[in-house]
Image (cartoon, rainbow over all chains, first blue to last red; front, side, top):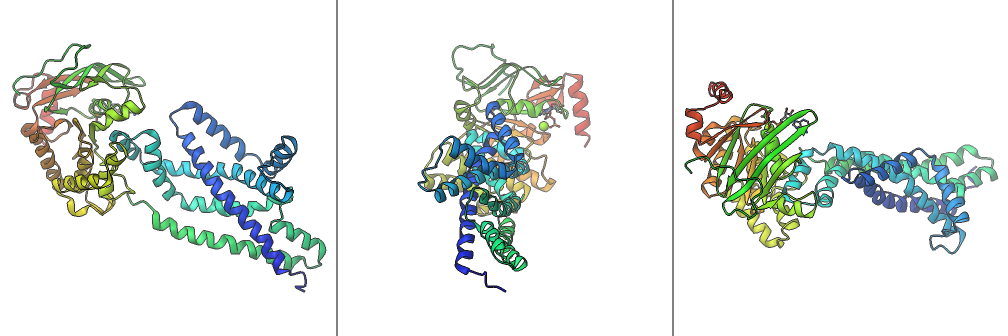
Length: 221
Length: 261
Ligand SMILES: Nc1ncnc2c1ncn2[C@@H]1O[C@H](COP(=O)(O)OP(=O)(O)OP(=O)(O)O)[C@@H](O)[C@H]1O
Ligand SMILES: [Mg+2]
């Protein structure tokens, strides 16, 4: 019954999933933070750009975003992200698409965190003579991050599962292997169960660990 | 300090030597509300000015315009001869010279007491770490919370937090200190510990603008009382004059209400 089970292939595919998740998580955290900074900036143009970005990207299906990186960026504009073969190029394009998409959600989570920081915190910082960037990076964002660990954990869990969309441009992550096994072997249920279990193994600890971190770093007022 | 200082002309060409804070003809609106109406106020170096008045009269707004936490619509504000610059680096530098103490303390919640007092020195004054810590500890000792240095603000009482906030402002070596109702959020038994620190500051010659309802503090520490109502400065006098012989009806009315408590 489990004769389809090729552990090397399985672990290899999940390893791609993990890599997609980690790179995209780091990238979207950075880009999402910059976007959040733009959305609370005193410069109207920055705010407008940040708002427009979030509202456009958030409302496009991820599949479309990922397809665009391949069809639009790579095949039309020739963007290869310094990759020299399709595997590498597609992987990097998928990461780029996932970052672009997930950053919008990171930005919104952070912005809700910024709203939990009392205005007096920023005022006291400004009154000391800190610049806008210093107020944001030293006072507001550190407190905002601490209050949104849980929402960010949800974004990270969603991201882990969203990496399966990378298969539409041929990235050999877990779900692509699942599809090929389903087509090859007559064991639909066990195959699906194994992959479902694999994803739970990735996301459940994320949720638990970050839930604990969230309590640990919460700002007491 | 005998008489009330006379407001200087609007455009003084030479930086005054004694006048530290000069507001001339300052106006501000919140939408339709005219919160500050033709405010002229000059604060001399070393002077302690107490601002009192009914709720909503614009005291906090006045206080906050002095370091430009609130912008003004017209008029001018100068500190130590320099007009307040637009938002940006210049303004940040000027704000560093103006200490501010808020009603709600506003200590940085994610930083320890010591870090709160060191932050401005490190990031604005670019003091080296060792010197900043030394100064922070000595200021914390001075306001009587030296033993709390490694705690977080939420672990301190209101009175302790406010004293840390004063230390945080003093760490910048400000030319003038602004206090916006520094004791209004405190339990009664903690008010005096904060007022004592402020009284000591006044004795040490700090220039202070204090919005407060603490008449005891006004009598003992202020050189001048400024009474505001409906966005205007209605009366300015020494504390003795003001409390014993208020001239305006608004002031008489206000005093009769608060002194009955
Ligand atoms: N950000 C704001 N937007 C709109 N109106 C405001 C704002 N801040 C203050 N006001 C209004 O301006 C008026 C003056 O406010 P201000 O806080 O300066 O009064 P105050 O004299 O300090 O009063 P209190 O004794 O209650 O602190 C009030 O009517 C207040 O409602
Ligand atoms: Mg007020």
